[in-house]
Image (cartoon, rainbow, N blue to C red; front, side):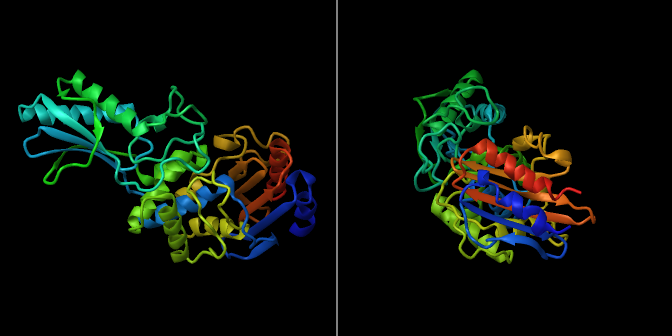
Length: 377
C-alpha cells in the first residue's frame, strides 16, 4: 500500500484547514510508514488524553484506586470528609461512606458531630482556563457526580460552581438520615492533628477510569488523573504541576516529548501542544508487550461507528466501522484523530491526523474519518 499516494490527497482536503500534520507507524517495529509535519507540535484538543492516561498508568499502575476518606478526632466529636481527587465519586459511593461513618460513630456512642470537608490535596486555580463551562466542573479534590446539576452521566451538562461544598452538604444530609446530626452546615477545613480514619470508599481501578475517560472523552476524569500523576511525582496538584509530571513521565517512557506542552489533562486548553509523532509513539508504547500496564490506553479507544465519541462517525467512510479504534479531538477550529487499525498485511498501525484552522467541525471530522478509513484493507 503506497500511503503517500493514498493519504496525500486526502490530507490536502480543504476541510482540514490551513495546518495539517500526520503520522502513521508500524506498531510492532516503530517504522514510520507515512508522515507530514509529524514532529510539529499542534493543538491536540482531546487527543492529549492519550498522553494523560499513559502517564497516569505508568506512574500509578492499572490497579491504583483513589480514596475518599472520613476522619475523626480521637473523641469522635469532629469529622472531616477528605477529598482524594476521585472524579467518578457518585451519590452511591457517598451513601456507602455515610453508612460506614454513621456505624463507626454510633459504636462510639456519638450522635452529634462538628463536620468539615478537606479539598487541600489540590492547589492552584480551581476553574479551568476556559472558564465556567458545561464540559468540565471546577477542578477540585472532592465532588459528587462531577458537579452535574442534572441526572446525566456523561457529556456536557450544567455544573455547580461549588462541587466540593455540594458534596459535603449532601453527605451531611446522609448522616442525618442515619441518626448523626451535624452542629452546623459543613465548612472547609483540614483534619486536626491526631485524627484517624473511620471510613473510606475507593474508585474503580485506574484501568477502568482510563478506559472511561478515553471512550467518553471525560474531561473531569482526565484532569483528575493528571493531578494524580502530579501527586505521584511530588509535584503540586495543579494545572502546572500536572503538566510537568505528565511530560516527565512520558520522557521516562522514552517518548519524543520535545516541543510538547501539557497545559491541562483534558485538552480543553488551546495552549497545549503535541505532535502527531508523539501520539503514534504513545499508542505504540501502549501496545508494547513489555508495558502491559499501559494496555488500557488501547482498550479504551472508541470503536468506529459503535461507541463513545465515535458512535456517530464513519457512516460515509466505507467499511471502516468496527475496524478502527481512535481518540477524537475537537475544539473550535481544531480537529484531530489518533488511533489504531490493522492493515491488509496484518500489521497493527498507529495513526494520528491533526488539523488546525478548520472551517467547520462536521466536514473536518468526515475528512479525518476518510483518512483513517484509507488504512483499512
